[in-house]
Image: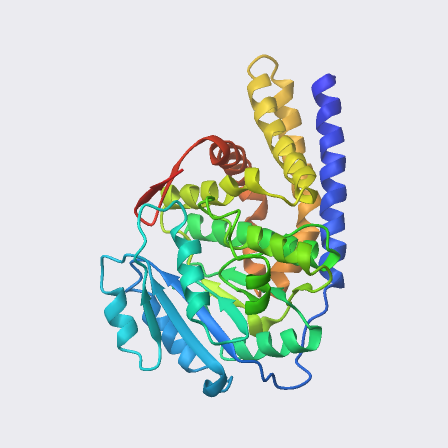
Length: 370
């Protein structure tokens, strides 16, 4: 009875949280620029061994509708061992910076710092070397920054996917994170964003002293920086909900790479200064951990397995309206049919990545990171 009561209480709290996110997502207006932007922008792209991808990104940036005279592209090569630098140099007008520092724990933050130091633009826009934006990406970001007087913009990211279980699962799981990001930023409930698509004023980066204080953290070049800026500029941090602003990126190709990515994301949780997010993370983790407890308890009393299945169905019912709404915006509605069947995968990775992210090291870009 105790485990049953705990399960019900956690489900009710979790359902209320999902309802909150769904209502907040619905409140976020679809943005349409009222006029053309005139802000000078600098796109900073940290890259390590991205020869296979960065050419496509640079070509997409060259094809942007935003005026080339207001656009600066900076690639910071993070000790690549392939031909990344050669590919970048084949694109005229793209500035290439070679990262010289070594023995760091956060190479990406150092790469971004170098890019900001060299940037001439008023608005810094960051993305990853394996991303692809649409032709109106820069124009939409610049117009939004001017209309909202925003100092920090969190913008949408979507995973491309083929027909494999791994890629479908990642794409669907990432949609949930994107929906929560939009809802949280719009309601100003906690800081969330993704470094593959975000922008901030160069002056704001300087005003909060960049990554000082968080530079020892391997990840967190996005959310930890966002919170620093939010504290100094409350009311000027926004989420940009626009299909023209979506950036597409490739999911991980192997389960090992996927778990390393999620452990990396989870590892920054212990460094969050944004205390508002701790209650959410704790509730989500405890609710998912409850499935593990029910599974183990089932070996002593099979009725717990029936409760586990009932909770599986209840979890799906609580999440489905929110997931469907977000999937519709990203034009990924076909993935929703897999949602019920992917629940066990989501529960398992949440439990283990959340735990390992706090106590374990992981491998990323060929480096062992603590």
